Structure formats: C-alpha cells, structure tokens
Length: 206
Length: 206
DNA sequence: TTGACAAGTGAACAGGCGTTCACTAAACTC
DNA sequence: GAGTTTAGTGAACGCCTGTTCACTTGTCAA
Image (cartoon, rainbow over all chains, first blue to last red; front, top):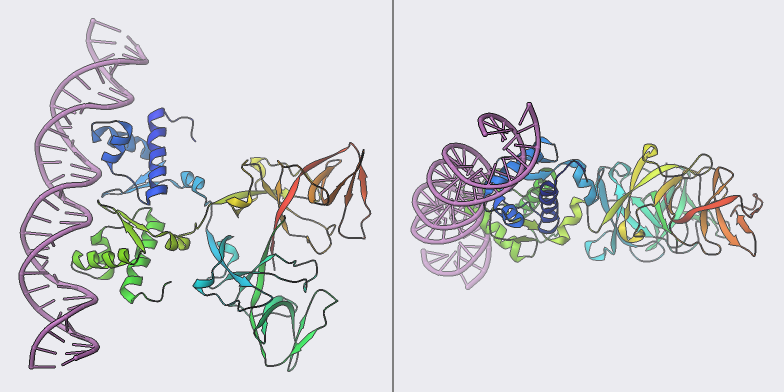
C-alpha cells in the first residue's frame, strides 16, 4: 500500500476495504468513527476528504456513498474484466447442456476472450480422442453461439453422446475427425448437432 | 437466473447487481423505485422483503444495507478468490524472469490453484519441443517455489535460453527430455537452472 | 358476486446520516 | 513566544432513508 499514508489513513482505508469485502457495502461515518475510537464524525469527515483528494477513494452524496479507487480494488481480484464461466459437465458422456442445477464449478476467463452472449461454458474432457493436444482432464471452453469453420475443434452431440472432434463439412455430410489416428473418422449427416466451438482450453498439471 | 422469479423481481435483482458493480454500493429504496417507475417506496420494501425470504438478498438495518446472496454474486465476477497472474515473457528465448517492467498482460487463475507465495507467472510457449501437448502460443503457468519431481514438466534455463522440458534427474546429471521425439535429450550437469514447475496451461484457439 | 390476494399509491413519521460551526490541544515553524 | 497546521471534540441542524398505515386497483378462484 502507498507508503505516504499515515497510520490513521491506512487504518481507515483498511476498514473500508474490509467492510466492503465482508459486508457488501461501505460503512457510515459513525461506524468508521467507532472503529477508530473517534467520538466525533468530523474527524472521519476530514480524513475521508484528504483520502479523496489523494485519489484513493471516490464519494458521492448520500449515505455510505464511498467507493475505493480502482488502484485499490486490484487486491480484491480484478485488474481487468473477468467473467466466471460455469463448468457444467463432461464431454464423453451425458448431456453437456448448461443447466443451473448441474454447475460443478466456475473458472475465471478474461472477458475479451468471450463473445457478448452469456452462454459460454466449460466441459471436462474424457478420453484421448484428441491425442496429446487435448488430454483427459482438460477443461475446454465452449462457445455455442458461433458459426464453425472447417478443421476447427468442436463439441458435437452424436446420439446423446458428446465428443470433441475436428469439423470437416462436405457436400451433404460432415466428417468428425479425431487428432488421434487410432480413432476412425465419424461420418454423420443428420443425427448429430454441433454444440459449439472449442475456443480455449485450461489444463491443470498434477 | 432462477426461473421462479417474476419480471419485477428480476428487474430489481438486476438493478441491485448493476448498481453494486458499477457504483460500488447498493441503491436506496427511492433509487430502486425511480428505476422501476414506482411512485412509492412501499412497493420496493415489499419486493425486497420477498426477495429476502427467498434467500436471494440479505439485509441489515440502515441505509443501503442490501447484500446480494452468495449464489448471485457469481455474476458480478467473483465466485471464489481469483488472482491475476502476470504474463512476463516467452519461453524459447530471452529471460523469463518476472520484472514488473516486462509484464505484458495479466490472466485470472483460481487462487486455490496457486501456491501461497506470490511469485507465479505465465510464459508464452514458442516452438514445438513439447509436441502436441504444449503447443506454440500456449501460456504456461510457472511455479518457481516448488521442488520438482521426476517426469514433471519444467521451465529450465540453459545458457541464457529458457525451454519447456520434462525433468529426469540422475546421479550426477539431469536429463531434459522433449515430448517431441524429433528433439534429442539434453543432458546437463551444472550449467542450467530449473526456473519452476509448469503447473497449469491456458490455450486460446484462433 | 363475493372474497382473497398481490401490486402499487400517497402521505406521514422517527431515526439515521452527512454536514457544519465553534472550540480544544498538541506539534511544528519562523 | 506568536502563529500556523494537524487531529480531534461536542453539539446542533437538516436532509435522507427505511418504515408504517390507510387506501386503491386488478386478477383469479369459488
């Protein structure tokens, strides 16, 4: 934290951050006074005034209208926009359709990696159909709202089973190809559906 | 969002989330009323009462004392602690030592994936030394503060050049092996240094 | 048609809240 | 030693805020 601050200013700034983090909204002047041992709200008023002049907080008129400056909010986790994307299932069996009952976890993704819509989700990969490139246990980020181009990696539903394959459209059929040569091409015409494009991957070692 | 909510409840919940996200503190009853077009704060009071009974918000006494329930804060960005980890360079050439002048970007990582210390960083991979498993352009998360075990993936410095290899220690030497069989093993004894273990990987397609 | 119920109006109220003013005390400057 | 600055006290003021009460309107079931 900024070393130019004196003990009182650090104390107040810390109390602001703690209250906002734990309670969800900023404290009142009297709550700050009580925390610091002040018997007057005037002392709080002047300290907040100087903190605002230093650019460390912003204030509006009204009760509890204190906001920490952006440079202080980094501690709470977000330097730039991040969305928490749900992990909704696995991609070798079962229905990978996002449903709120099935959210197993959420993972952070930079907002600029995501499309505008809010339907992206993660699936955990099972099996080795994509050879070494996409391994069992990897989490693939699926964008269901985009046109898929040739040779891109997609999640496809074939007879109620979801798999990760490369997408090769042809005249009246589609070839779904594994990167692993041990798996034969799957040729489909009607009885399948492209769930979405794999637009990112997260792997955790060990 | 929960489908049991009617339009008004969704509207109010959305306004709460938006105000908290953009302004840093919750709105007053009258601000909610103005947003919804109410001419009485009583309507707001009753809606908030029902939302609280549904467990979607929590309230204390006092002005602006509204907090979204934990299950709704996911939308505003943080379900669980996330740290922004710096991307400090590339891993085929140059010095991948974290220095704040060289931070190119920051990427979100769940805190529970990270060690307690704050020295983790990302490197962008160049070349195909790890075959398909780690591809050019992938971002590897490096943990410099951990003992490396046999066959784990590490970032190693060999004569001022950083590479990603698997780590095989032997009696008085170390073998650094590529997953790609086209690359020969590198046998080193003294003139190298393990920068850290690769503990995660992020890949962005296209 | 009646009754119950949810949704909203309008006004009044009491307490919480930020502001303001006058004052004290210690520390620092010239 | 006089003057200034910084930090805090204490009380009063007035607006803002959440609450409450009585009332209206529309919907739906019996």
